[in-house]
Image 1: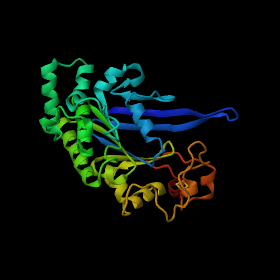
Image 2: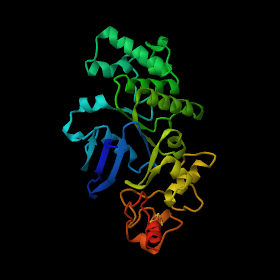
Image 3: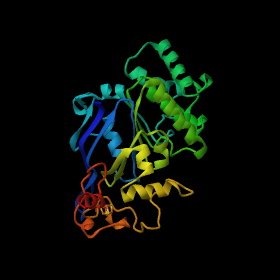
Image 4: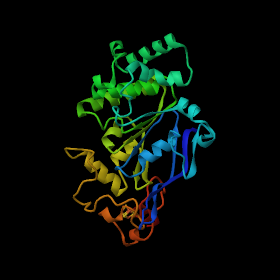
Length: 317
Ligand code: SF4
C-alpha cells in the first residue's frame, strides 16, 4: 500500500541560547525520522515531553520547515505546496483547546473560519456546514453563538475537532488531544475521534506522551526518544511484546495509578536528559537497566522496528 504521508529522514534543528558570554547552541529536536502513514491508518507517536514529537507534528502540518529530509503528502513534497493547500488536506487538533481557540470569536465563527479562509460556500451554506459539523461532534446548535469561555474543556475540544473536520481534510494530526482534559472526558473524546475516523475515512497521526491514549485508537505505534524513533510496531504487537527497554518503561508507566507522568522508577534512575547535551551512543543508556558497555559508545540503528543493541546481539547469536 502506498503511503498517504511519508516522512523521509526528517530532521529539525533549533539554534538556542546565546548571549554576551555564551555561544548559541544547536538543539537537534528531530534527528532522522522516517515513517509512513497509509490511508485510513492511525499512527500513534509516543514519547515524553521534549522528545521531538510536537516538532514532528508541526512539520507534518507544514507549519515548520524541516532542516533536512522531506515530508511527502500523497507523492508531493510538502515544501513545494502552499500553506493553504496543505491546510485543506492536513488539519491539526492541538492539546489545549482553550489557548487554540480565539476567545473573542463565537463557536460558529471559529468552526466556520476554515470554510471562509478557503472560500468554500456562501454565508448560509457555511452556517449549515458548521451546524452539521457541530452535531457530528456532539455540540448542540444552541452553542453556535457561545464563546469558548462559556464551554467546558470537553466542549472546547469538540469545537477544535469540528473546526478541523469542517473542510473534510484527509489527515488529522492530533497533538496530545486529550491531555488537558479531565480523565472522565478523555475517553469520550478518543471515542469521538475514532467514530469520526471510521465515518469519514480519515487518516490520523495521534501524538501523546501516554501509551494508554494511543492504544485506544492507533493501529501502529512509533516510540520516540530524544528526536529518534526507537521502536515501531503494530499496536497489538507493541503492547503484547514490547522490545525496546524504553517502550517497556512507558508501558510500566501506563500501569501505574497515575499514567502519563513520564518514565517511572524503579529501574530507570536517571531523569530525561538535556536535549542540548544528549548522551553519547544510545541516548537511553543512562536510564537503561539493560545497557551494555557498547551502548555508551555506539548509537544503535533502527533495524527490524527496534533501535537497540540487545536485538543486534540476538540476531548475531
Ligand atoms: Fe539499553 Fe543499550 Fe538497548 Fe540503548 S542500546 S536501549 S542502552 S540495551
